[in-house]
Length: 329
Image 1 (cartoon, rainbow, N blue to C red):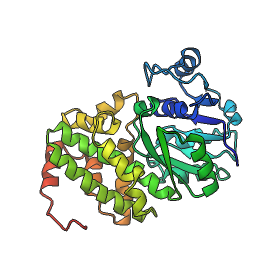
Image 2 (cartoon, rainbow, N blue to C red):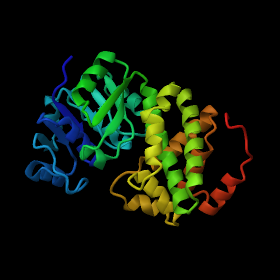
Image 3 (tube, one colour):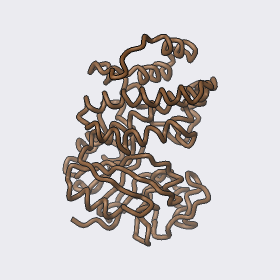
C-alpha cells in the first residue's frame, strides 16, 4: 500500500490547514472546495482569503470544485462539516478510496459516529480518523501540533502516518477509532458550557471544574460506545478538551461565550458562516446518553439551553443546586 497524492475534501480553515500539511515539501495536493471564490484564490494567489486570510499556501496545492478530479488521489482527508458528510461521500466517484475523517461530531439524523456513516455510505473504503487539539490557523502556520490517527487497519494507519507526519505535525497511531471519535465529538459540547461560564464571568475555578467534570462525562460515554479509557485520556480526548475549552479561537467556546453574555443562541447560529459542531452534537448526544442511561448532566444542560427550554439564570441555578456526590461517579 502506497499513499502519495492526497485530496482534502473541504475548503474551510481546517481543510486548508491540512492541505498545507499534505503539501509540505512540494507534494502535489488537491483541495476540493464548494466556494468558487476559494478555488479561484487558492489557484491564482495561493491563499484562502475567506477562511485563512493572509496566510501563503504551498504552490503545490491545487483547488477544484469538481468531484471527478478527486479520483486522481490515493486517499482523501474528509473535512466537511459532520452533518454534511453523508451527502458529500455519496458523490464519491471512487468506491474503494481510503478515507481519513477529520471532522468532529455525531450525525444528528441517525445518531451515528462519523466512521459508521462513512462505512455505511462507502462500504468498500478503508476508514481512519484524524483527531486531536488542532486550531487550524496554528497548523497552517506550522506551529507544533500533535494528533491522533485512529485506524483499525494497522498497515493503512502506518502508511498514512508516514505521509502526513512532520516535525511540526506529530502523528500518534491507535486502532481505537470509536474512542478517537467520541473525544472529538463530546469536547465540542463541553466547550460551549465553558464558553457560557466565561461569558457569565464565573471565573477560572468554574472553568477548571467544568473541564474535569465534563471529562468524566466523556469517559462514561466513550466507554459505553466501545472506546478505550487511554484514548479518551490522550490527544483526541483530554488534549482536545483542554484546548477547545480555553480559547475564543474555538468556535464552540466562542458560541458559548456569546450565549453567556446574553445573546440568543438561535440568532448566533443563524449569523455564523463557520460551523460550531457542538450545537448540532448536543441534542443527539443528550438523546443517546438518556437512551443508554449514561449520566451526562453538563451535556443535558447545554442541549436544554440551546433548545430554548431553559434560560441561563435558571440553568445555572439548577446546576449549582445539584446534590454533591462521589468524584468517582
